Image (cartoon, rainbow, N blue to C red; front, side, top):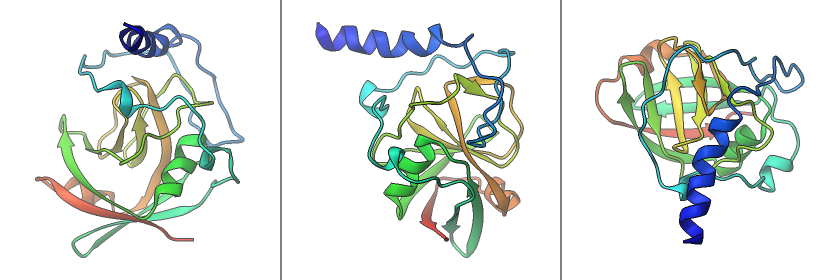
Length: 182
């Protein structure tokens, strides 16, 4: 019974904070939030995929401007990270090898082995072409190869500097090695 109550609270809390977003956070590079303009699908993921606790990595030094490399086949995609607890958690897990798949004809998604922190983040974001993000309700990484309307529960981790067109061209599931560049 206690587990069910916790799961319900985890699902309801982000919804209750949806109207309480920040306008900007220029210190961390997190994009500004704005009013919701479209609805998300109602898909659910187990509560174990999302972490509300701040990890040791999330409390560490700034990762603003740190670059990571995504390699699949002979293709290299470079991403510049923003500084937030989720980005620090991702960086702490590197190197990683993940399988990405297409979702909704606008994004590629994959699940990291450990949940990323969702502390100190806006209630959602308006993703742009080339954004790397965490969709906190499901716990998955997202790479947008098309612009998208505002998404509740989205945390922008960074932005692709080069190679988005190659990633968008991938039609089937593909394996990506993610490593730190600097």
